[in-house]
Image 1 (cartoon, rainbow, N blue to C red):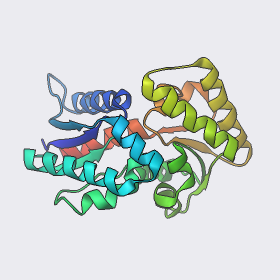
Image 2: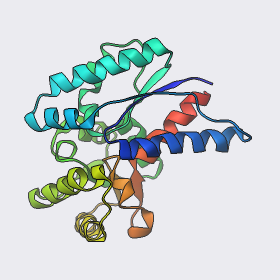
Image 3: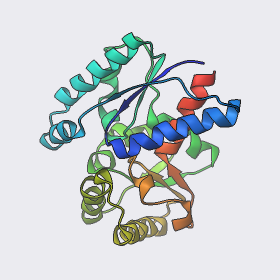
Length: 229
């Protein structure tokens, strides 16, 4: 079995889900008392979030690159960045290490392609929804990406940072997310990407009539399967 290096803590709420899903997949595949070989570096998310808000992506990339180097030196065979948004600096992190990064958008695009999705709604932080670093990975697979309007983008972003990252799960916020996704479905979305690793704490397939692509689950399962290859 290989060893995965997790860059976690962004937020720790969703990093817990990574740890659980990776181990559940390994148990499913190998049975018995098997569990995953995992190294984790968990950052202080307050520091990262402040750098995001100020637009200082270079400094945030340096923090994560340093963490990735530590994971490589400790014996990780590949890196999983346990957040969608910080894949904005994935290439900068990759330039500091000699082991591969398993990109969350590539893993998600694989699942969208398998499901024959041609148009998909994307929910995530305002950075993920409005910038191209994530959407382009999906679009290159000939999949059209729809995002909410400006007001709904702010609503989604507020719920992520002020509720989900703090462990707050609100029925009112769930209803708002369902409303926003339904409006994108009316515009042609055949499925929805939960493009922030915390959104799966709030929304699941039982809440929606269209296919849900939970990036946390997709990424974690892909990581577990790579451990076993």
